[in-house]
Length: 61
Image 1 (cartoon, rainbow, N blue to C red):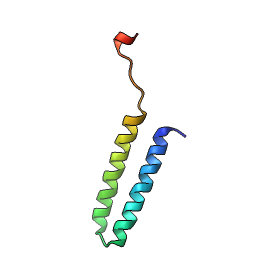
Image 2: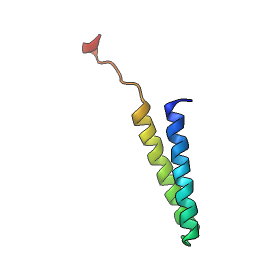
Image 3: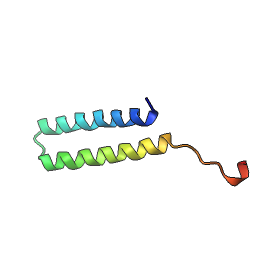
């Protein structure tokens, strides 16, 4: 399994846990959905930045 997939699975677990907690606290469903979208978006951005391949510059060739 790639590091990217591991980051995304971890992000989904965090988002699900926070969504369940917010639901128990009585937060409106629309705010839970917005929060999950934001968390997943941040997770994708983090996964991409941590797992991307470094590009070689012309000097390194």
